[in-house]
Length: 365
Image 1 (cartoon, helix red, strand yellow):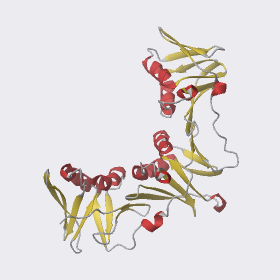
Image 2: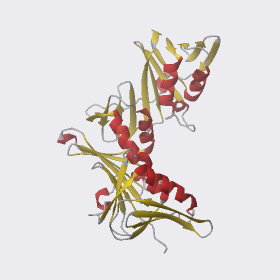
Image 3: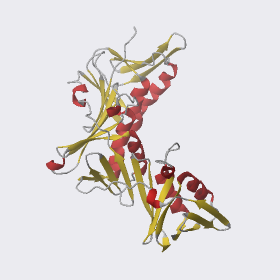
Image 4: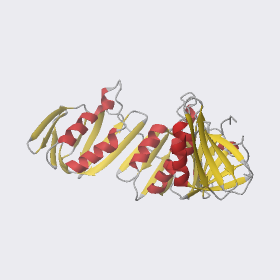
């Protein structure tokens, strides 16, 4: 195998695939990146057996072939190379010679035959959507994924393809983020899948601002194809809880809030929230909300924001980090907080496509 490639494109390609490589693995081949050179293209693939990523970049291929090289070491070498042009040749013993300007490296690889084959998606359900749209949906939900491994079905995002709508949901039992997006597909393709956290994180990094992504789903795997890149992941096996029953009924009060102003106020006040109770009180009264954090061993912080509110006085407490998470990840200028009373969950909404349910904390008067 023999090819030439520009440093920039090689470096970008390695960065796209190397995050999947596990630092601790019992199989040496899983520390390696599979390099396959053919017809003017270099294809790079990594996998940890749960998630696999493939990326293609243009290269001048003199001799077609395949090998695997240590992913992290190769990434470090390429980053430090002095010249823009890189020439790589690999002999039959999988020893790679890397030349760039005055630099020369010899790196020992392993045969490509040992590398696990990524699954094929023949007969899979297929969905197409805009990459930027999917990335936006992930951003609006992924922060609410549970990290509690005993509730493994919550360690990912539910993708529910029903009635020409993709509904994406993440929850950790104390909050729930949900976004809905219209996409067209036949009724026969309807399916619910749970995409694990690692795949969600990789996908968020790989999606770009332009072009479509094709989502292919089998019983146990999902593939996201962006044309010159591909991410494949095992699905979480299990039934996602009925998230619809968590969403409260009709709100008594709908309070419009400036997202950025509200976020910054909570952020400042939460500096004096105690680690033990970790709650911030929101005291709504005519024309204002007072945000309060009190802790006997630290002190207290208060901030008053003028808002358009004409309802009765309501005091409700939330975990400040949980209250700020959606505000950080939304782009709308205004959000609406829906409240029923002081003990029912609060619901944050923007438009008709996004909602966030947040459980209240006990208020100490």
